[in-house]
Length: 147
Image (spheres, rainbow, N blue to C red):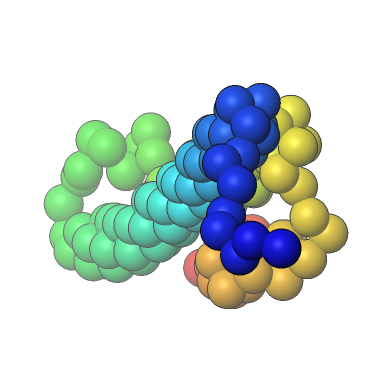
């Protein structure tokens, strides 16, 4: 018996090429899904930043308008908008925007079959929970406050 290798048939080589192409395509698809997932996480983080900005801006305007209301003199803007209303509008806007963005990301993930039940425990979503809770507490404080 001869130990020399026999040349492989052409169909076997074509099968190997097809398998390698399929493997490469699957790898590219997996990378595309990971990029999409990271892009959705960045979108949530951008909305967290926006919600935090609304919260900060609401605080700043509330304090500024409260200071102006305490000074003697008539301020026409105070007749239209009270500090409480301005703060409440900004806090509610941040809360609703972040909640809607979380819902939108879940819909997108489901549409592209990337939704996993553990999504709600991811660090990005946990951070969103914290900001949503803070905004909700601020809304309650402004609504039920006595100022």
